[in-house]
Length: 162
Image 1 (spheres, rainbow, N blue to C red):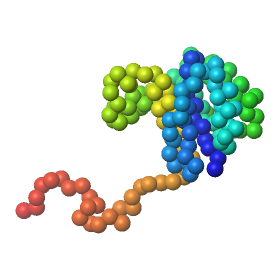
Image 2: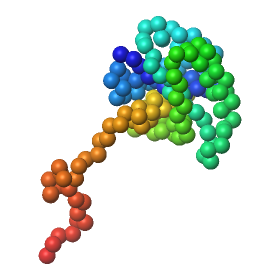
Image 3: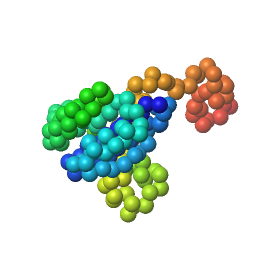
Image 4: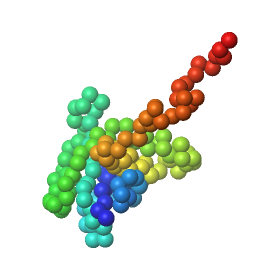
């Protein structure tokens, strides 16, 4: 089945993530030297069908272009030239590094291992890709309150009735 590739592009290193065949989960794939990224993607595409690239796009908190945006724009031109038939979607990458660190902590990763920027890049790419998939899947996981038994459907104040 076709795969989606998440990309957290950086001047030196780029984190990559891939969707599972059913497009439910994004998994960290690899961290690649940015100068070798297009070659890596070409090799990957020889074994897997890539349906879409989801690229993290860096913007400031106020929505204005960040310093890194110029580097990503250059990469986007290279990506389009190398893969003209594969669409590219830009995804807001604000907070992905913070979320990646949080995921590493929550996953029990040791502090020494969390300093490895390659891990942060891969996990950031997975967060970017997962955000895209969640936003575009159309699936909702909300619970219908009518389906919850009455004694479990409302939070109680903890006070007993007299």
